[in-house]
Amino acid sequence: MQAEAKHPPFPAGEDGFEAAAKIYRTQCAQCHGNPGHESALGRAMLPHAQQFFGRDSRSTAARPIGELFWVTTNGVRRSGMPAYTRTLSNTDLWNLALLLHSTDGELPDPVRALLAPTIPPTLPTGTGSVR
Image (cartoon, rainbow, N blue to C red; front, side):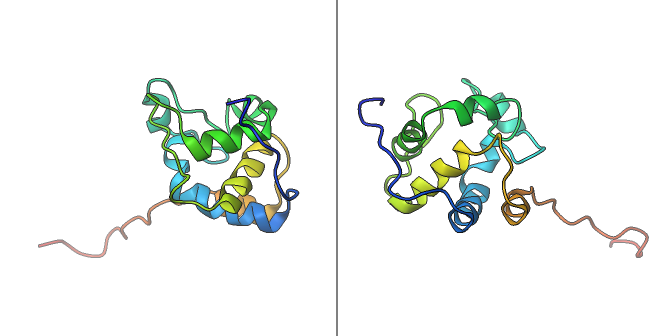
């Protein structure tokens, strides 16, 4: 992996972070958590899925960015981490790597808002009986 690790072809930026945050919510959050919310599913996996915005954020941000790109591109055998090389573009994969590399720092508010977990709406109470 280290021999194949590359450097991003463009710098990190808010537009790329926003694009990556949308992908992260649909493809990654269920195992890797959201800011302020770790994933019970990811913690139940063996090996445990890293919680990028929780207890593992510093170790994730300390990893070389090329390694983060490689892992999201190629996956990790016997871990549950899929390869996204056939489903995401190189630009998307680099944006994800740049986002993950920045998890222990301050992300722009619009990006944090996109990463916030969605809570299913609750049913109204006291509106009559169900038949």
